[in-house]
Length: 318
Image (cartoon, rainbow, N blue to C red; front, side, top):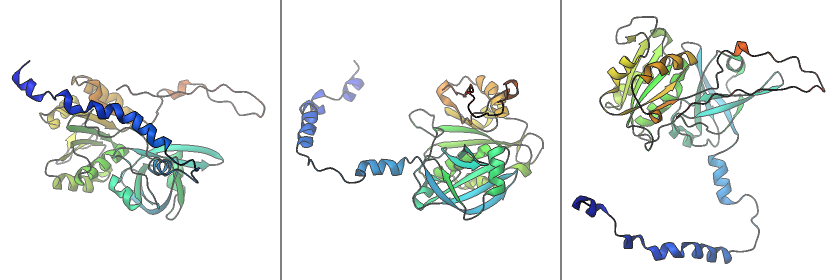
């Protein structure tokens, strides 16, 4: 054993094994002295847990603003908003024509907004639920969501100090939340954002992203990648392994991805050539099923008839 290693070894006596041995008996003794009187209502710790991890949240829509590429930002307000991590999502609960549906949407606002009773979602009208939302949601409407969900957030135990974010279209939302959290020092990592759009006119929240990058003292770098247009200050084409290596820097990095399935299909092949450990590659998945046209269509429902249902789930291996 080297001298340096000896210095760093903590003497076992300092662990106070006697106090550790008395821990469980001491707890049992305090429990035994507790009152037999029944608790009226919800126990305080249960109430705290429910407020931090609610099954349902109710919001009032306080603002609606249009963005490029059929994206709309909905500003939400509630008396209590459960704290969320930058990168998480809310599942919106809806009744459409008598059918109960739920759809996850990434939170784009800063986690600090939760303490102010605020939250915001950015939704692209490109599907059954999102198109219904675009047509029906109005200011002052009351909507219902889940509590914060998902694990698409930074973890300093698992992730490298630099995150290369690969975003496509509306997939910018969780990264916008992360960028705000970095600016407010509630998250401490470097974000290199490679944001893919078809053209400069399709970039969502461009001014806000560029402004944060400019003011971040190097903590945030935004690279716009245009697939169908050449524009000054932007990369052209797709997010390749060469483009990742060009902008990632020399320090170890993790890759986070959020965008359409086509982006994942392309980017996964490029990332495979970078030799990163699996834990350093993460993707937000919305349950998209490939080749859905090959599956049998459901027959018309008939009362009293039994039906067989096959549930298809996507799993991202870490």
